[in-house]
Amino acid sequence: MTKSMSHLHEMVKYDSMLELESHSHPGVRFRIRRPSFKRRSMLIGQVRELGRNLQFLDAGEGVADRIEAFHVHSKIDQLYLEWGLDSVEGLEIDGSAITIEDMLEKGPESLTREILERIKGQLSLTEDERKN
Image (tube, rainbow, N blue to C red):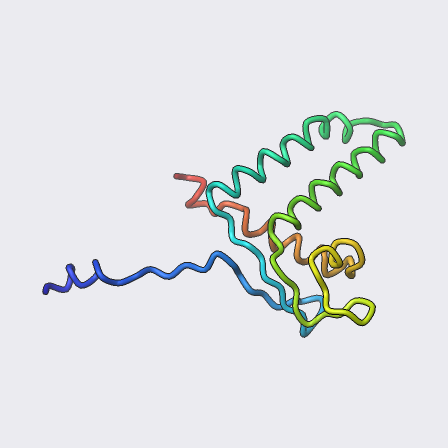
């Protein structure tokens, strides 16, 4: 068998999850989902639906507009977290192992923000990906 033919039998390994260490909370690890074509499309559709009036609200000068814009931004962030966060290890809340629901409802905001940024980082296209 030639060298070029030997490559046909090598399997490419891909993990659909990414396990990361927290920078803000040493000892805490979390797993986030890597985007696939379908999952990215579904998320974009959900974010677009929530954000339809966001530009208008962000431009508003009234307190009610700013509060509503903040609410919509928070709901979008929650969508990203629910979409991308698979598990959290090394953290207890109120003496119990953490669930995703606990993380969203009672988790430390600094860790939640860190996880959110890591999820959004996975969704960002690289320069080469944008060219294609």
